Length: 368
Image (cartoon, rainbow, N blue to C red):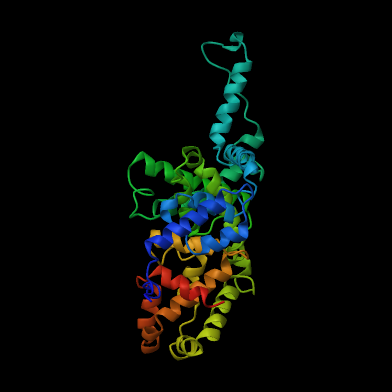
């Protein structure tokens, strides 16, 4: 009896498997109330690009959309309106506020208030003066955040310079950059304990790219608002990795790196000892970036998107899945690492070689 040919481990799934997975995903999304466990299971295997449903799937996985489809429109309208209010509150320049107040003051004056062809200058209160030392003044807050805003501006301009979506002189790229800046500034002002940490732009980029490319134009036009709330949700699971006060605690980035070291020791003790004892390569030397930037710098953008399908599918938050993927990355290059010294191994891990993402995720999944 003939048997159907099997794909070698890590090989791309056959076309019929992709179609089957796509139809199962579409069926799961068409239910009146989405079964999130089923959706997570399907999305963890990767969301087929051809299905055009990744924006919806990610919003559901991040808890931005409720599982009841009947509530979607109302919930989206509420969140998008809330984001518009945040923009008005946090992105206004004090000069614009003052000018607005002055215009309103002028409107309330009648024509008789114009003397010698000059308008009365509206009075500037002590609190509104740019040189005022008051902590609550709009000017004080403006100056306080100006350095952060400059840093955000620099980082956003460096986001994926190889992609026309993010970089270049087109009005589309500039508008996308503006959206990234707005989101990061508002996040910084709402989260005083963290504000902005360099690299947050890299975590925001995949979310905004996916939502801005939603085939539904209305959703695509609200990509900035939707990305903001999903970014907040995603970072809530990694907040401690960005909080400097917690860096050396069990819940900070050092604690996370220690968990990775334990995971490698559990599944490949020989490799862990060679890396950390023989060649003295601490996980901080290479995995700090892997973890804090959710692998966005280690693979090409399309591969990152596929890795994120799996990351976002973890019901306990992305961190455990992320650590398993990092462990799998080490195991996949173990021969080279065991044969290497400090210099060659560090170079290899800081410039991770191109790899079959399906196989990487397959190996990571086996590390449960």
